[in-house]
Length: 192
Image 1 (cartoon, rainbow, N blue to C red):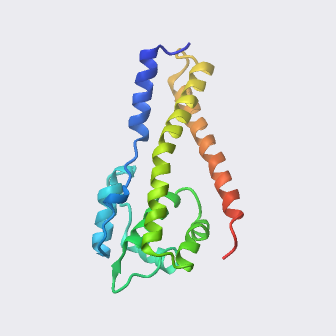
Image 2 (tube, one colour; image 1 turned 180 degrees about the vertical axis):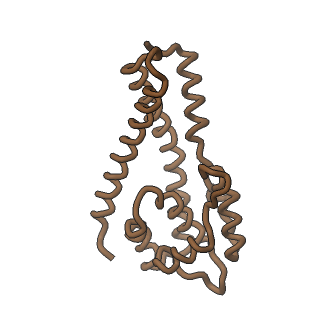
């Protein structure tokens, strides 16, 4: 059974609420260096709403120290983290739930090894941020399309659990396929 226009608009509104993601805009990235405690508080403040559980932390001191040891970010200078560190940590935050630490190292390694300057990394972040804003609408459309597939194949008179499980599976399949594509693209990157 096709949704009415009003039902479709309600669905879009609901999906927007569910996939709403707080970004750290380029102009929100501080130009001054931060100490570890300031850095972790900053990330929690700006990315805390993306966490599933309120008690979770976006970044911990242990995580940051491990990222430094694993050469995902350069060591801090005089215990202070620059804008470059912050941007790399934002990338790590979003990538760590999708790909391995080794894959992240392959993605970000050239930025560290070739010693991209802070301004260069900021410009890259700014460009990617602009692309992310556009990608949000692609994601929204994809989620709506998955919902419409479920509606078409499992009418509303079907079991609600089955409908939700099918929707979750379709979203999972989409994520899995995109993750596989990411891995293939990472494999094509030059070795360190």
